[in-house]
Image (cartoon, rainbow, N blue to C red; front, side, top):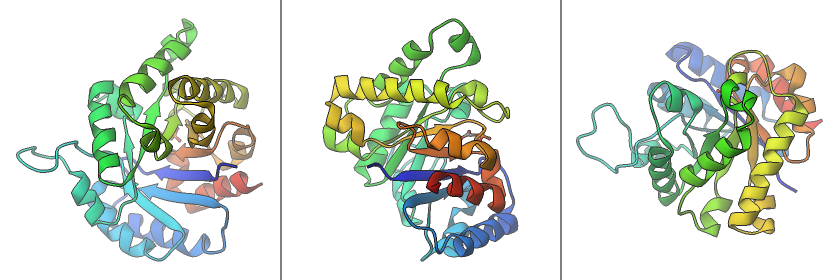
Length: 252
Ligand code: PGA
């Protein structure tokens, strides 16, 4: 039985004080929650402050991106070692906003995945099709290309430590989530890709989150699908009530 994992991607939102306040609320209000893993991803400038607010709580933290090189002349980037230094357990990699707005390729994402795994952290690797790709019947082809490219060269032990997030681009920040059936279909296809590349036991063990307009009101239905193991939540993770409502949906 895979454990559910609910992650809040705060993206480029909040200021320092409100990030700390949100983290404090989540720390307090999640203390009794069992049976589900929780993490938040603040803007990297606020990770240190948020980490202090979350220390000793049920909520882990991570970053929204890293660079694959260990150190050096890479202006504006942050390394896996720096992220570990702040107690991060996770790094989101290849989010669609980074792929589509900032030009990240599968090859770049793959280097980051290796760096994060080598550093002992858990990568959350995002894949997902655009609306054009879906409407032209290319969803599975796109997903397979992204999985094979972004997760190239991972051995069995490494893929077991990797989280995959299926995030259809058309569902992110639009209020229009994939239906549970649409999401489940892709999650099942992801397990088939993993079973072909590794084996079915490994395919069954990998945590696959869904992301894209998840909120308290649709979480239960999405998270009750057999192959949906959690949620990567954007907008709804910025309010404690909504985020904890999603967590309640995971436990229902
Ligand atoms: P959303 O974002 O929940 O606001 O749609 C999801 C994500 O980008 O991870």
